[in-house]
Image (cartoon, rainbow, N blue to C red; front, side, top):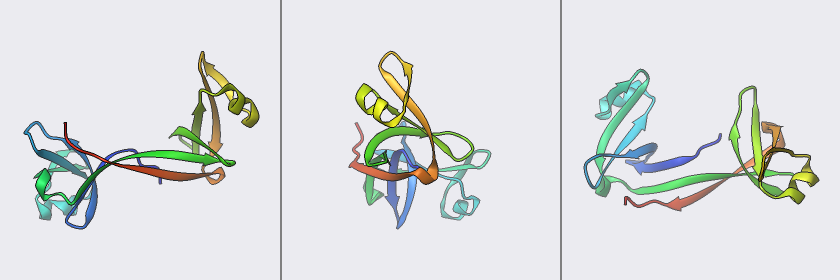
Length: 128
């Protein structure tokens, strides 16, 4: 699993969230239609939201994954067909691991999911 973005723990369950237009509120996001029983409303096809007070949330945090590939950590993103694309600005690391230059200061490499371990960095999040 590869998660990135803002998450909140609410009533024992984890949800992705966005900041609401009203101060001190967030909008929890769910893809489970059964959540309508818990006050979620249809936002768009297959997406349900519920606006809650920040004080009602147990915890808010930002998840920023690192990808461990052959003992080094990289940033990356999902591709289709079971692959990820890793990136680094470090030319020496790129050469060591066979990355290709994709931009003036960026090197990338496509790898399979089974070649990596995902490490989730979790940072407390506060509304601005």
